[in-house]
Image 1 (cartoon, rainbow, N blue to C red):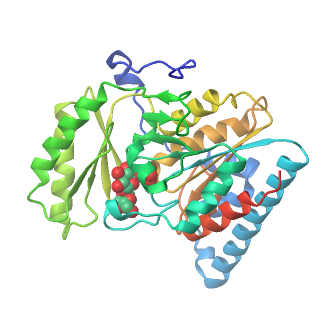
Image 2 (image 1 turned 90 degrees about the vertical axis):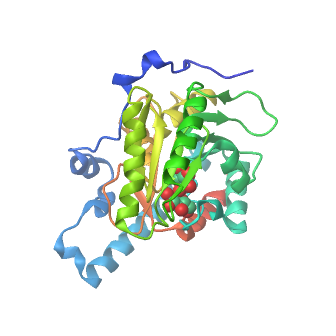
Length: 335
Ligand SMILES: O=P(O)(O)OC[C@H]1O[C@H](O[C@H]2O[C@H](CO)[C@@H](O)[C@H](O)[C@H]2O)[C@H](O)[C@@H](O)[C@@H]1O
């Protein structure tokens, strides 16, 4: 049985005006000052912090903040009987960024840490990759998977309760996009076109010069312009993502999963999301709204980044090694 809840298929009719791109926010500092003062570190590019001492201090505060988060979670889950649900991005979060997309393997240690977390708390992978492709990397049957930036959602292997593809029409459209882009970029050394079933990625990480990088973007722009009612372009880490022009993103996928798991509209639920890229900001925004709403549970957004950047997340981890350490601590929480 497909799980539908209040969500419906996103038809062509619903596209256009409702299509969104991530918006950046003006009241960032205001919000952080009120809710997560220590996260202000991520947005602080004052010269004062440029010295080694400033950076060491920042690091200390960041570590303290993450330790406090673990201590708070222990209390909330054990003494206050709250429930945790964990959402994890894949590339750049569970696996390090590498030049060849097909070689972005996660370590056995990380796999075990994710498995331990999933044994205690509902856990989902939310990825830009096709759902089956990301499953082939993660190889854990007990997880929920939202592939194609949330356009293909399924429950753990063997449980048919959740099976939601909000934009079925995009499969054929994206197959055409994939074939067209492949032909167009065939002669560009280093350009890699990847199908993710409901989206297509045009990678330029391995291009040898800026001209070739520009050719990749030009080819993407042309195809999006020719299909402007159906397609939109997004940027990622040295990649252009072609997606269907619908009002759906990783944040919507997170909300869908919470509802499907009957964990929405509950003050006793803590929703946590770890991610490193622009598309993850939509999920951080949903979590921020949850935290702001007194009738809802807590939302904990954790951005994975080595450099300070503007984000809607409240916490940060530097890299996939820190993600592993953090997930190990979450998995060790005694519930
Ligand atoms: O949502 P994610 O799971 O983070 O997926 C986003 C894209 O990730 C992959 O590309 C990125 O990682 C590659 C491997 O490290 C790297 O080579 C590339 O430059 C990055 O952009 C994936 O290949 C894309 O399809 C995903 O959409």
